[in-house]
Image 1 (cartoon, rainbow, N blue to C red):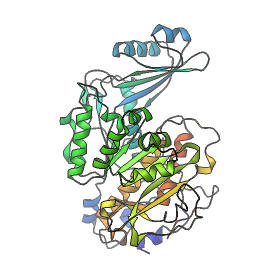
Image 2: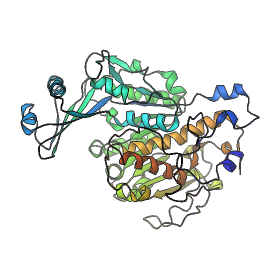
Image 3: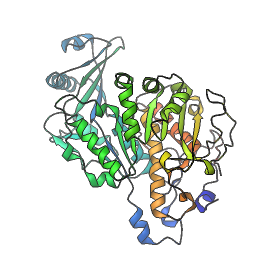
Image 4: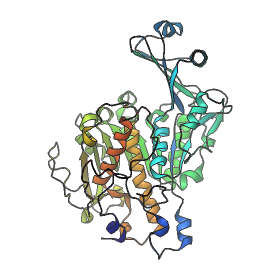
Length: 448
């Protein structure tokens, strides 16, 4: 067992103990980790970040009467895309009459990066657009206020006009009506993609929405340029599918795109079925391994599944009960760490599953963002591995080119816990890190 593993064999406090500079006590203090490490090496290896591209938008929730909904040409209980001028008039009316109850920064990748930075207390870089002129208290202002200070927004491209706005209007009967205004969120240009930022990243994170561009919108080309840079510098590309309908339109195209460009795939069970044609999430994740290296598949009340590859000679058997499923005893080697298939001399498929943490919340406050939270936990593990490789390259943790720092089983536990935290709150973004210790909840097992 390596030096770091010995330190981590205590009860797992649910907030993962990763190498890196962390402000919370449960994170490993890098300045006291190893007396043989030189300060210079520590400084040189300290830069490890995640970069992502998103359609910047704000979720605006308000309570209105049915007459208000009709006034703006909306249909109660339905979702409609509205023009920018209608969106602006609607927003000003909500502000004037003090009808807004919540304004949250949104967007799948924005949520993921915020949650990553909150968990890791480390840098992430968001690429997208932002209003050049920001009004204090307005939606763009709220976006900035609701984003972690550790998320680097310095590379956002300024635009004249609004970012995306998604209005949730709750009527007299409690029925929810949605009005979506894209604004300028798809106007990210190719020249706004910084090559050097992607070159040094631990991962590039994208959503399928970015690649569904309309004629005249530059976002698709910008996203593809980012993928080009990531492949040039061997940076893992992470794709979250985002919605069933986008994938179901042309699953063969997505399969080919994933096979050519994507290392890590995140999806829920419905998106998995749209992509693979398979309803069972475990079999769908297994099928996706034909095109990618690591799969995270959330399955609602069934918990979440992960599938990946490891080196045959380095596989580690689980200490947990073997699970039945469409693949018999599929979790047999879940204590193994994941690798990209091309880095394996003899690749072995590995799988893991975990049921909802503590059976799930007593009352689910919000399902929006639970998958993004799980992905943030996975990204934290990947970034920790990259950091540790750069800081202690001769460690036993890096005899092979692993993709994750922890085993598939441990990543499942962490992703599951972070997802629970989001389900248990109103906002899709974490407001704080996980509790330092939760001894009263259950005994945790750290595999050796």
